[in-house]
Amino acid sequence: MTAKPSVVVFAYHQLGFRCLSVLLAQGVNVRLVVSHEDDPHETIWWQSVAGLAGCAGIPVITPQDPNSAEVIEQIRQCRPDIMFSFYYRHMLDQELLDIASVGCFNMHGSLLPKYRGRVPVNWALLHGESESGVTLHCMEVKPDAGHLLDQQVVQILPNDTAHDVFLKLVCAAEIVMQRALPGLLAGSFAERPMDLDSGTYFGGRRPEDGLVDWSLSAWEIHNLIRAVAPPYPGAFLPVQGRQLRLLGSYWRGELAKSDIVRIYWEFGRCYVDCADDCRIELTSLEFDGEVIGEKFFYAHFGSELLLQ
Image (cartoon, rainbow, N blue to C red; front, side, top):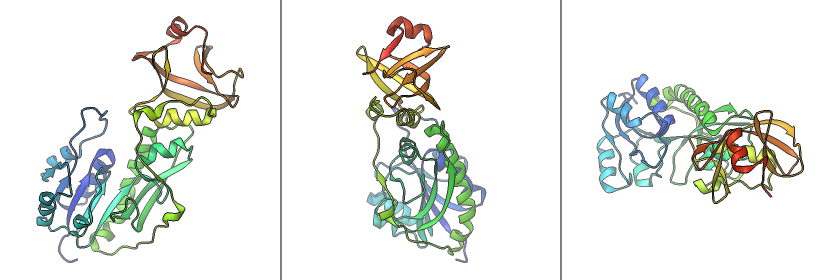
């Protein structure tokens, strides 16, 4: 390409904000940004893609259906050479993908082909992974299935929450964009096929999926707690007709003090002894919306809360 390539960006969330920031910092000719309206029922902790685009003087649309005839025509009028998708939540149909003359590229929050699909960070933590990363790949109608362009690995520490890991992925995505962008803008980049048979695919998760199964090991329960810790809805168990929410935990690999599955306090700290005779510390609890300390616990549940 001899002329400065034109770009259309589909983006949302913090990763979308930072990847768009990279494009703007590099002087990319972004003609249009397609984003989402914030959901009032969702905890919004990330910076606004629409706000960033507005500061840069870039038109923004937030359609319910990006594949509608009206949106397709609006994007076609931009004559994009490249389209990017950065944590945009809708799938793009083939008619839309065909508009870009050079290609369409997506930034996914896992090391594809592992954890294709929805909420890859949460799933990686639920499975106790020790690493994750981001992948820049070619887009096609099948989700997270196009050829690979670049990846960046991040480490997952034993007490990282999903939020911790996501912030690492945001930094990793910036690195990948800085590295890949010159070749993409020049229309010269290397691709390699994605081996879907060696990967995994997962769907979305709902708040009710945070219900704790006390037959699991301490490590598995810890993984659930940190995978759905705030700003996500949190792990929980029903107690006295209400919800006891487990919003934080800490793993030390300690042995349980009892063969009974129970929550209790010891030396000012709250613990749960699990079915595999190991225990984890519970660092943040709420009962019916109220933060639980040691005095609250003893007043409402006694010396221990039995879980079997």
